[in-house]
Image 1 (cartoon, rainbow, N blue to C red):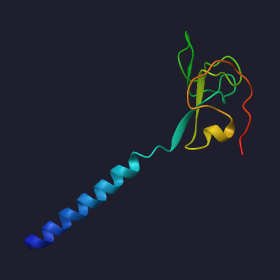
Image 2 (cartoon, rainbow, N blue to C red; image 1 turned 180 degrees about the vertical axis):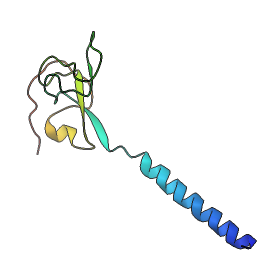
Image 3 (tube, rainbow, N blue to C red; image 1 turned 30 degrees about the vertical axis):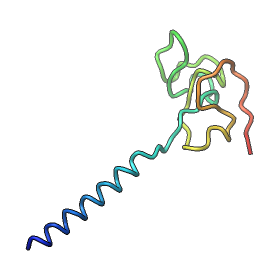
Length: 92
């Protein structure tokens, strides 16, 4: 292999690595608050709880569930913790 071939291969590897890194930064899921059923949250369910599966009521505003990126608000959830446990109203 000559020097120009090695240089070309190195550039190709760098381009592929950069493209892969950029794609890896794109979230595939969002934490959606207020959509999980009791005991079915993925994490965070308020003071005194440990994590996944600890929500005590349906649609608890401080418990979240992972959902496909970009779908939380359509489901009626929020991207931030909130007070209450009203049933989410689907949007659009």
